[in-house]
Image (cartoon, each protein chain N blue to C red):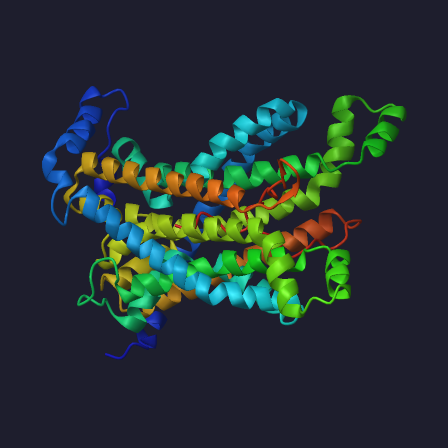
Length: 257
Length: 220
């Protein structure tokens, strides 16, 4: 791809293009085998799921500890700021420099991609866990301690359930970013739905580029919506029949990639 | 050749500078146009609260679409061009800019507005002379987040032939440049993000000397 390619564009009103896209989706060859939509979707989901899980395992306990003990609070700020400043596009290539392409691994489990995606998912989970836990009403905690609850019981019985909507919100933000950025794994030869876009760029197949982009966009939106529902489900009821309002998150991290 | 190919860096400072300049230019264009598009929408949402959910729904949807997908959706129509890059980049700034502007404008205490009206301010006067100045810290906080986010996203446009510092990263990976170009690209991109954030923070403090320091950590 070079400047000379920038001449290649079409008219919005051109009817042929959208029928090409429909034909692409209708072609049974694009739904079969390891290069088909279902296998690429599964690769995308495995890659994203493993990364969000790994990031949760790392970030949840740390966020809980910092939120509960109020120690090392600057760590959260630093991680949040650093996570915002480092471009995920560059992070993937840095990971390749350190870990290599890892071509012996399955297309969904290339170490460089998993490493970069995990790092990307840590800041929102860490920040939200910390903010959720430290934001629990001190009077409530005082009352619980006065009733003789141990620190562990306070964390499990009070802080975690009250922070659950925010923690889930952090996992949702992380998951949406990871699903988005997993598209870039195709740039380093990994799998996932990004392959359709990247291969389309390489061969100049506009219909495939468009179809791949539609699939990626759809998956990102579905991730956002389904995890949003899950977030609502974990919000504790504070009064009978009325759910506690889920705090409206303000975006701190970007759409990543 | 070892990874630390400083000789290449030394002899290609003009290339690196050019990419840095392109990065900055793409960012400024995106945030500039983002402000132009978001400002009237924020005023509209502030004045007519019923339009706000629709505005956040559309901009939220744009925000959720992965950048590579958004660029790829545009490529068949606008080609591998700066226009394609900017449509995508501007789209991502809208949610952040509008949300912060609406939050900021809505934060003026009712009695302050009441006092302004009693002093003879028109509704327009209240907006421009009272609500807007008081909202500036929150608005600038939005511009900071949008700018830092955009600096990161510009790198992805390397895949559609632009990219600024992202072109160094992609070129380093594809062996168009030595691998150290990846590190140079990432380091300069982080530096640019930090510098832009500092400059905007300074500008905000200079513009609103009465404002206290804002909170540094919020939930995502």
